[in-house]
Length: 137
Image (tube, helix red, strand yellow):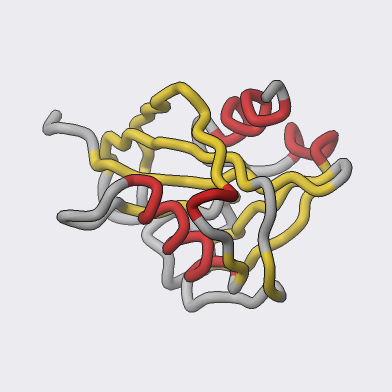
């Protein structure tokens, strides 16, 4: 298999909930899978900037670089997408402060999920682990 596709993600916690995005028909992922607000790091982009961009695109919310706390770990997983299985690496940041109002994107629907309900959701690989790591920070 080729080198992993670099992605960046954010964990946003509020009381007993975490912000997830549910993937719809236009997303590359399987429909109705849940993930963190995340996406591919574009050529010439640093992971932190990609995380902020994807957060804004997938949720309608905004944060600045100073609001990100890097989780000191690189997650990797082989993920079955609609057409093909690919290897991904994911750098994750915990968001400390954000502004804005939730809105859907063409590919995702942002939802606040109770942390205790995570085992019952169809989560992409490493999502629960990244949330656990963010909670421990």
